[in-house]
Amino acid sequence: MDEIKDRLLKPSKATHEDQRGKFISYLSIGLIAVLVISILVFITIHGLAMFTQNGMKISDFLFKTDWNPGKKLIGALPMIVTSFGVTLLSALIATPFAIAVALFMTEFAPKRGAKFLQVIIELLVGIPSVIYGLIGLAIVVPAVRTIYGGTGFGILAGAIVLFVMVLPTITSLTVDSLKAVPRHYRQASLALGATRWQTIYKVILRAATPGILTAVVFGMARAFGEALAVQMVIGNAAMLPQNLTSPSATLTSQLTMGIGNTIMGTLPNNALWSLALLLLIMSLVFNLVVKLIARKGRIK
Amino acid sequence: MQPIITTKNVKLSYGSFEALHDINLDFEKNKITALIGPSGCGKSTYLRCLNRMNDLIDGVTITGSFKLNDLDMYDEKTDVVELRRKVGMVFQQPIPFPLSIRENVAYGLKLNGHVAKEFIDQRVEESLRQAALWDEVKDRLNDSALSLSGGQQQRISIARVLAVRPEVILMDEPTSALDPISSAQIEDTLLALKKDYTIIIVTHNMQQATRLSDKTAFFNLGNLIEFDTTEKLFMNPSKKETDDYVNGKFG
Ligand SMILES: Nc1ncnc2c1ncn2[C@@H]1O[C@H](COP(=O)(O)OP(=O)(O)OP(=O)(O)O)[C@@H](O)[C@H]1O
Ligand SMILES: [Mg+2]
Image (cartoon, rainbow over all chains, first blue to last red; front, side, top):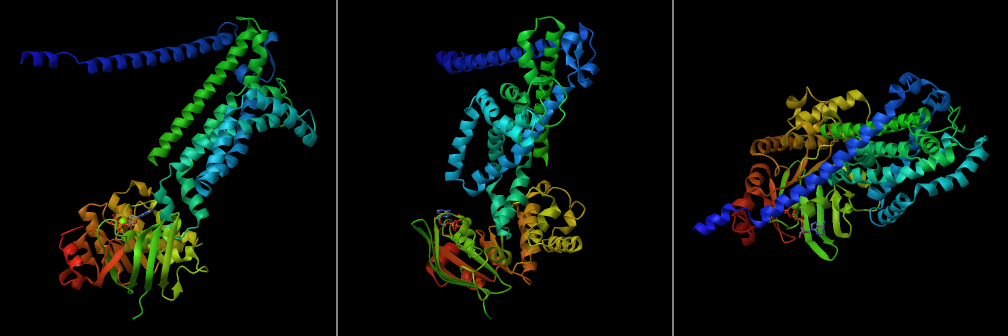
């Protein structure tokens, strides 16, 4: 009897394993949390240095259009406008394509077509961004130049390159949300005398809308944050874009171009950190939007 | 009187598996016919033939003749979409679309190209009344149909079918996912609908079949065993198999 009681009171081997597993996973979570927080704090401190130490005004940073930190001109509006320009334009072009491809994969050719396209999408995701940039430089920029004149560098070229880069993201997330639409909806709609097309646009797309919006926002987040490929086709002139084909610069391209040429702690360097902070804030905003859409979609 | 639906020598195979063997069955207008039988005997399969929902399943072969009045349902020239408007279907699970109550009921009408608001409003009200749901939802027609209870959702599904004014309504165990009170309400609804519609209902509930139906067809293992008035089939069946089944000895 006592032996059994003893055994029951002592933690078993399984309990030990359980505790060890818990310890390890909490440790990992803790480490990641510390990492994320330090990144946030680090960038925030450096990003604010220009305003706290160099005495620049936040309003100048956000609304002025002259960017030359070496001469104390820190207007980041050109980069802000260009970043949003390429992001919105690429999402605008990519979304209809993504929805069409996703519908094809889920509704029209779910067997063979879907497998084939899945491979293509994975391929597109796997291509390094420098390759997209090169192709953009070799093909898109000259094409834009021939068709619209000018140098060919600018928002349009950037948006076209980004369109190809965000297409797989938006498509595969849209496919997921279409697949999540209950099969019943299709049956019930067809049984009411709807054609397949009516079923798709009246019920399936409607039901998948929150998911598709999420997909688009994810695509926009990716476009907003992309640096290398954009840098190669945007023209890299920190000027307010005059039109879609005038050379300009995005937040990211300005950052990658400039960061090697400045000295830590100086105003030009701090100014770039402020751009980085702005990028970080935007990516948090994109995340927040995704969360909001998800919540709204659930309540319905 | 000429039956509204006539089916002859119906055979159906899923791939190489024959699920229906030579079924002959007719349905009279403005009557409720119940299809009963043990699980897997082919009731749903047969029912789905009547509005060609089996067309959606890969590898199905159907032979035999299906007539809706004089229309050959499986004729090449028959418009499936049109057929499904004439022969509506209510499923086992309530399936409200993620739209408002009004939009749900108006769904089929809008497909038909009806857009006049007064017409749609009037049809929506009429259909909801017929489905015995109007009083419960009249103040919240713009709310999402997903916010309704299961029983209300099923009556939305019925109202949605009624709104397109089909001639026949197919129902596959429409109350099996519902509580007894909601089921009773739906049964009342169906009895009231009988004067305007022909109803064919699959049910596992013997009492429901006796309460609702004028005629009953008993299926087993893909065969139609017996088809008669409900009273005769339950009180005085001519086949022993039927007798055993309705008295709960198998199935
Ligand atoms: N899509 C399908 N593919 C292959 N076989 C199927 C399919 N649907 C049904 N079957 C088979 O056909 C037979 C009849 O099925 P059916 O669903 O019509 O039965 P049922 O009488 O409606 O049963 P229950 O009362 O359980 O709903 C069963 O053996 C079933 O396994
Ligand atoms: Mg069934």
